[in-house]
Image (cartoon, rainbow, N blue to C red; front, side, top):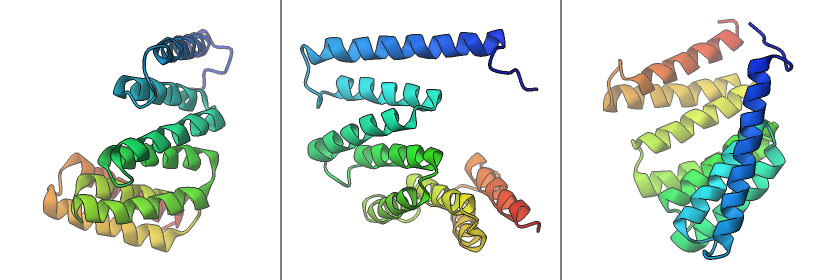
Amino acid sequence: MNLGVNHPAILISMANLEEAERLKIQVIEMSKMTLSIEYPSMLTSIVNLVVTYMNQGRWEKAKQLQVQVIAVSKMKFGVDHPSTLVDIANLVSIYRNQGRWEEAEQLQLQLIEKSKTKLGVEHPDLLATISNLAITLLDQGRWEEAEQLNLQVIETRKKELDVNHPDTLTSMANLVLIYWNQSR
């Protein structure tokens, strides 16, 4: 069921997002008076605003703020700290939603390498990143590469989590999507 942009539920959601944006900007501006950008609650406020922009489809504004967050995370925690890796993964999501596949893919490859050394080859965050790379490849029509990565994730998740674990089942559903796109 498509409600359409003038449906009351859609209009209420849009107003709520605009109000959330206004309040989040207000919190950030007030926090700037007493806190530096490196302060954890300040970074959280900025990330919350990034999420609001993403929900509004305002990808360029989201990207600009997320790049700032990454710079602070790298400075504060280091380039391979889990918090920095999550911030980079958020930028990947923004790039994917903008259709900036090459940039998303390059960042995902960097995340995979850093996660392998920092977290280990069977860590759930690494597997999620590999799975996300498979989806990026799928979005580009690179079926075979996406399939191979997804099969790798499924096998590791079966071994580490169980065949019936929700993450394993999600990976299997992603494989079905890959096969469906190939009419297999």
